[in-house]
Figure (cartoon, rainbow, N blue to C red):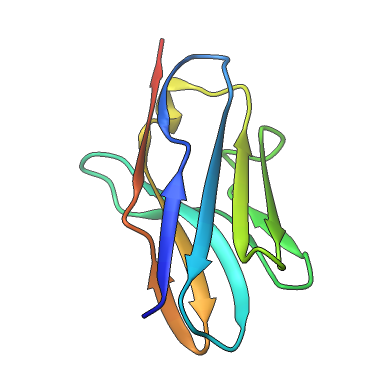
Length: 115
């Protein structure tokens, strides 16, 4: 069974930084796109950033210049470095992976930014 397991969420003051990690485990042939989405209370889930197996990245306008996505294809892990965090970044962050032809999601990790 393929699993995506996130870590690194928590509480931070505005202007601070956090780094999220997400590791894929199980048996699979390949992972194409990996990324991060987030969902704040009463909001829909939204894209934060994605990265392809070749390293091409895509960011939401709201996080450009502050967040950096990266991945380690050997470790099947994707990272999200979040700097200059704002209270509006508060949400549950979900790891995403397009793995062996299927969409996969992690269980989510809470990020809370206090003002």
